[in-house]
Image 1 (cartoon, rainbow, N blue to C red):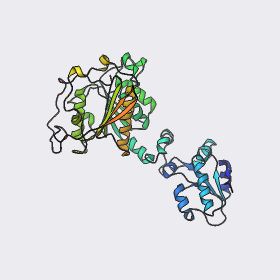
Image 2 (cartoon, one colour):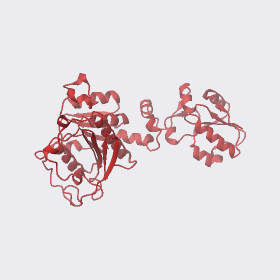
Image 3 (tube, one colour):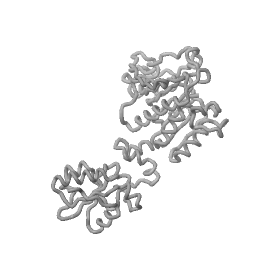
Image 4 (tube, helix red, strand yellow):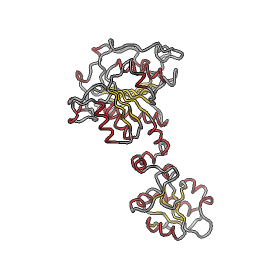
Length: 381
């Protein structure tokens, strides 16, 4: 016999008359709020142990989920075990909310903005409320507010990173607008960090944007890394890349690397600071900077405008994964992107046991000034 489906309004009336309402979504979904009067029991748990949760006697049981599918399947599974007087709430919690019926929040109630803004994250079991709170407590250093920094910072802010420290000493130029999506025509001549702060605050006012109008140097790198959880590299020169690498190894910070050139890009995670002898650093990949003629910058070689978007999004994804402690990072792998053929390939990155920066037991001897040897990197400007 088919399981009856009833409207949320009818379910509420029946609850007043003594029916029991059970929300079969997962616990992290319950955190977003449940229909008033509902008891939260995950679908799998209810089907496995119905006698624990279903009332004794001739009491009607109403099942609700997010959209009505899981509740119907749960009712069918319970009916197959011999339980009767079961109904599924059609349209689930989504329809319940749409019809302005009352919702109750669990203990430690989320504020309405948090619950609505991050609702899609909160429905992910790998994130949930605890994970979103970790993102909100995280502090990320973004070096560069250009081609890579623009998409990376946009999505980090949208994801709810609590504190973004952005360092860049440049100003917005019209030639930037083809790829640096943080900036606009109206902000030409404005410091990039100030333009970035304006755009990101408009997107997510919950995020604290710390604008640092400085270029990363040996004199300020330790200060820039102070209190930071993850560093995202959107620098525009090799000297900065080596400096960031050495500082991240010294201070035990993961470094999310990205670079673009014409139609090709690269991304990786260098985590040698936390995993000496197990994970490579940037110097394991590039022991020495290339000669100037081998590394023309964007102004000289050009870059496809959307390419920094691809690589910057990969960097943002890796930073979020590192903060949440989920998935497998790009540590030990170099991801190559060829936009013309739209192909991705990986190269394994071994640890250099003699690396001057990250070899186990290697003492920090100070930052090396690579500026003389390094040309402008084909990256974000």
